[in-house]
Image (cartoon, rainbow, N blue to C red):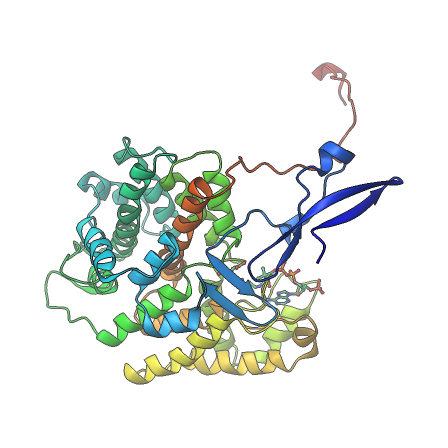
Length: 429
Ligand code: SDX
């Protein structure tokens, strides 16, 4: 195989190196292109642009393959825990017993947030979306760790990693409690990561709360499936913000904001809203499909389609099967699951979706599982943030310590006015 390609511009031939990944993915290295030719490349939405080289997560969108550090996500979903998978993503290998116990202990120990931060919650209206609260609270953590914010100091970074992982969970649970007017429930450090989250979400001071092991298993699985997805919009945001040497909390807060949008992590909430709407309208899935295909409508089939997957999203496959399982174990029924299945079936046999290779993505069935766990709709994207956190951290850390960490700064092709005269206000009409 050649290790370079030739590009002919205005009669002159330039040689550009080829970079090949460990799975034979190929890229043309254009770093010198503008200096040598005066040309840049343009790629709106970055559909064809590699922003970095990374050894964290591999996706083959045509085959529907997703692996964290080489391990298939389905295997991790079945056998691992969220804490172990977080370690794998961040540090690059499965932890030994002592590494896992050390990491878990740090997560337990750092579960509280500074008591002053509890007052922040009082400043939000009761209608505030928990993603607004989460992003600002995570950024506010940087005010409490002023001596550990240097992204180039590995010791400081290692100090922050378990803190942000543990505290984001507490912030998320507190924001739910505040939104329903219940007292916050402090973390109980004897519990595992997921148990502690459920405890902070659903326990109340006035009566005992028993943690359901089925709910813990389902939560571990969901968080694992969301834990990383290479250069998606929010992770790219974390890397871009981090590339300016902004601290870890600020970079993660930016990732939370990017995730919030309905084209990205916000889709899990939108899917359930869409399914509820279909239920209200007599369960007619064809009307939703028709609207999704209508180019004059802004409606899209939420939880469907993906930039990278041109096949079934492997995470959606696992969640779809797990939904049934969880509802059976919890002895619950959810009409939305039947509607979702009918909608999927209809879409997958409709030529519009078939031709465009639009399949259910991770967000299509996840909301139904969160519903079964008693988590309210406006918390679904918070749950996605909780799951994606180790991925954001792993990429931020990799960028700073393993990779080329030049500031992210794309170029543009300017299409505005050429040189224009400044006219005083009295001369304008
Ligand atoms: C996530 O990138 C990641 O890895 C993200 C993620 C992660 O783990 O980080 O996997 C998580 O964000 C999942 C995606 C959640 N979003 C949704 O479910 C929202 C609905 N889906 C879409 O809006 C859309 O499919 C995107 C945003 C997910 C992907 O957008 P692309 O890659 O820019 O695709 P596109 O808009 O160019 O679509 C190609 C064609 C277009 O039609 P034509 O112009 O060719 O006629 O497919 C159509 C689109 O209009 N299309 C849809 C559709 N998705 C794409 N038509 C109807 N319904 C849809 N859902």
